[in-house]
Length: 201
Ligand code: MD6
Ligand code: FE
Image: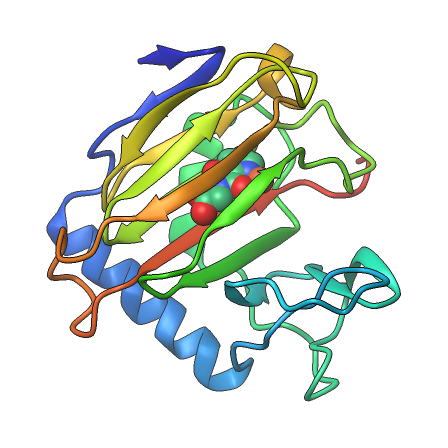
């Protein structure tokens, strides 16, 4: 399905695969705990907590947005990128080289994500591939300018989104999470995984 140039694959992962992915994320979080990112300069906390898997991890702190090889709190390298996510990338990205980063965002019921572009990667030829797990989210997608008109879709657990080509730099965000829409996470909330190629091959 194509929404504003974004490829949307509803229900790409079935319930068993979602549970396997959740186990992989839990294992990564034990090794690389969720941390609370803050906005550059202001230091205002984002409402999601995050961690990463893969060689590089994305983070935001007072110094800015960037990719780095180590967890900001433990100083350790990020956990390995799971094979299952490498396979997803090869299946849906249309990009020959593997992803280097998987950002893990955890949303509590009240968390949201403001309209933004993903543009901290050197290689903008590669798409960003995202996986939703847990409660449904209202995903807003616009155009190449912040003021461009937007539309919204409801991303459910197991859905995959591929933002590439003309949509690679579209503004997007999460308006809200809809509580009680999935039983995958026993305390509710939502996990979003975004796979990215960061450097030019
Ligand atoms: C989210 N997703 O779904 C936030 N970025 O929680 C993103 O920011 C995103 O889904 C780039 C490509 C796909 C995405
Ligand atoms: Fe994004």
